[in-house]
Amino acid sequence: MLIRDLMRDLVKQVGSGLSFQVTNIRPKLSNNEEYLQEMDRVLAAEAKTLRLTDFKLDHVFANTAAGIVESTLNLKRTSEDEAIVVKWEFELHKLILVPGALEKVLSKLKELRPEIMVIVEQEANHNSPDILDRLAQSFPYYSSVFDSIEKDTTEHDIENKVSWEMDFRRQITNVVAREDIQHAERHETQAWWRDRLRRSGFHPVRQWFNHTRGFLFSDLTQYTIEGKNGCPLLRRYTVPLVITSAWKPELAQSDGGEQSHSILCFS
Image (cartoon, rainbow, N blue to C red; front, side):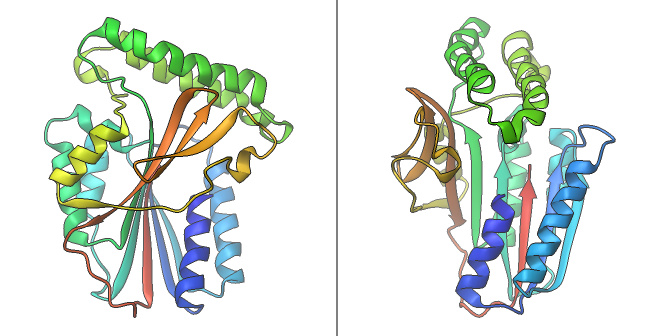
């Protein structure tokens, strides 16, 4: 869980006794809140172990690009010495759908001056205006994804297999069978995001990672993690799947003495 890892890293760097708040902006996929309850339980237990003070976890539901924009524009700093971490998990590309939405959100986040912004996105180009081109681009990507679900699912994750299949089927249907405003899954490559974020006043932060395999895939040799422009890229055999990048606004500064920390999560 990326949020838990960020909490641990901050405590290692700054020490315990931190005031900590997590704002989780996410779509509401169903009325079943068991997953959110489990997240609350795990993070609350971790906060207690790390001896964090004033730990808060808020869930904000946004099911559309417009909802994400509205939720983001309502974000405010609680104090000037607050350190903010922003994490986007397969959500930022949905803002490409609405004209001006991405610009508004990036401008607001730059205003908030986060210490770091982490972006997890598909490493794929599924945003061509030509539907036949999108079909050609998506075939090897989703073939690898569905093959992974069928062959690589571990016993621990077997209960999530159906939900994964449903979500990826929804994605590929949106990519190859929807046009205009209904085409929400507008995946872009890391090269596109680098250019877009640089033009919005963000600069990349180099990440350190294992260039061979991630710990989640230690027993699955078909997965490798390699560097691409200083970012960890997950491949299955020869097919790139997911890339993670880290960013800071150009004007962001840190004096190293923050005692209040916030994580803004879009997932």
